[in-house]
Every structure is written in C-alpha cells, then in structure tokens.
Length: 198
View 1 (cartoon, rainbow, N blue to C red):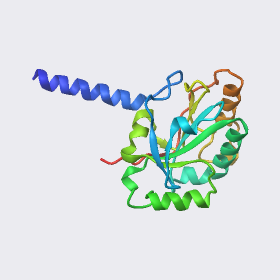
View 2: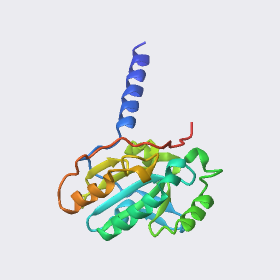
View 3: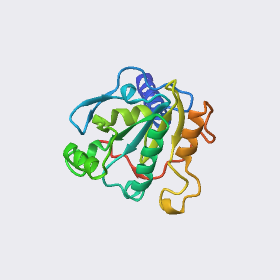
View 4: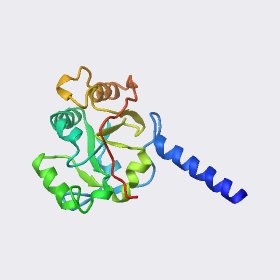
C-alpha cells in the first residue's frame, strides 16, 4: 500500500513538472543538447545562440496554425537575425515520424520555407518534455545569459494572424536586446498539440 501511494505521488509530481516545464528566469537546460538537423548535421542549442540570445520555436510541417502563421514565422526569423538572436526550429511530433513529420518530410518542408536556421528533429519529444512545450507553434526566448525571458505565442491571434494587434515575440526580442525583462513574459500558446508517442 505504501509503495502504491509513493508511486502515485511520484507520478503526480512528474506530471506537474512536465506540465510546467521551464519558466521565465530559468536557465537553458544544462548539458550539450544536440539534435539532428535537416541538413544532415548535428546541431546544439548553445551553438545556435546569437550574441543577444536564442529563440527556440516548436513547430512542424502540417499543423494548420503553423501554416497560417508561416509569414509570421518568416518575419520572426528575419527580426531575430537582425537583432543577433539565434534561432532553432524544433519538430517534436515523434508519433508522426513515419508520416507527415518524418525526417525526409522535414527536409522538404525546410527547403520549401527557405529556412536559413536549423530545423531539428526532437527524438522521443525529449526536448519538448524538458521545456514543457505542448503546442505548435510555441516559442521560448532566452537572453544573452541563456535565461528564459519569454515563452508562449508569437502574436495575440494565432488563428487569424492577419487580425493580430500585438506581436508578442517582437516585443520580447526588443526587451531582451535592451537588457530588460519582457512584459508579458508568458502568454498562452494556441495551436496543434505536439504528437508524442504513447
């Protein structure tokens, strides 16, 4: 009985930790996180960081929210580059590795979108689990000290980006470059669920 109660307590604590992931003020998870890039090379998160920080975008190939926001993602990539923020795009849809989010499909998508930044396959959704990422698209912006400064949505209308009135990620990048804390530093991400293996 005691063992059962302990197991339930551990499971509950693990579930809470998974749901929360990392929060503003937390460090980029320690250790050299290396993922497979669609160009065939291994890429580390720290190695992809720019002078002013790192933007991690959880995305995929086919989510309707991602597709609607492709122009916004492109603009975000350009804005980050102009502000010396490195970017990586992460595909954590492990349950679809044999289909729409296979490595080959990722490579084709990266080419079609003319990505100049790494598009990385997250095996077994390990990075998504570590970050607490739940949706595509979902963003995590780290400052130049590799502390999480912002997490959440790109804008205030992911379902209809043309009707957005606030671009959260650009405001967050402006704050980070100025050495300030973004306000807000957390927004609700809306999109497709990351497809983890059962």
